[in-house]
Image (cartoon, rainbow, N blue to C red):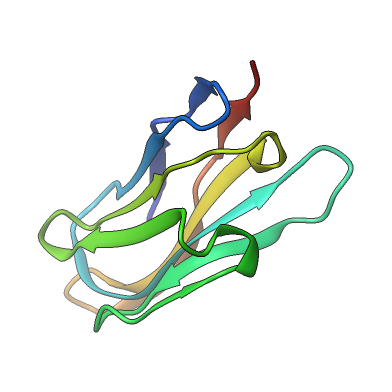
Length: 121
């Protein structure tokens, strides 16, 4: 299978910035959509942003204009640049990707282990 490894979370003050990264653990034949989700304590997991193989992006209304999702296909990596962070952005952030790996085109649909983002003064 394919593992996704996230990094970049941490503690930041309101108004600050963080950049999350998520990389696939093995060589990938192709990746379709990649995305970021988050889950705050006591709340359901919600979609934050997605990006297709062609670069089309979508964002949750709550992060539009503040967050930017991007991907580096050569590195099988997706990024989430988060600016103007607010306390309500505090959550565990998970990345997700689906596609194919191996010369036999095995499908995968994987999630990262999650990285904590805390916005607090």
